Length: 128
Image (cartoon, rainbow, N blue to C red):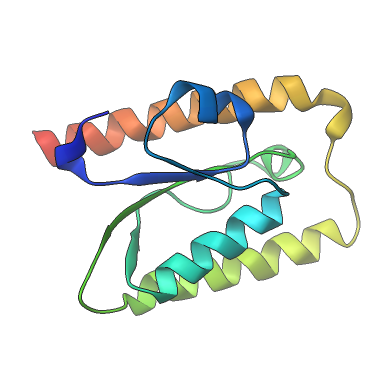
């Protein structure tokens, strides 16, 4: 991990915990990850990756990894709105369905790959 980039990964994915150093590991659900990210955003941390996945199928994953940036001197209201609406959307969707734990190994892999791609994009933007 490049410490000069100053980021953390908030995750409940054991695979991500094994593969990365800059991790805030949540022993809990996808929603627990969202709630922890919300708390950090309300303390002034930047939201680097979007809290919800790009597809509806990924939302039913038991795992989620979200990148947050450095703590700023002020709270970014746009980031607050994004995380708050993401939590509400997640809760609305999950009222009708439960996480797909039957395929949890596949979801752990997918989450790790999506994280890898997000980190590559983050590094490309902030290093170049």
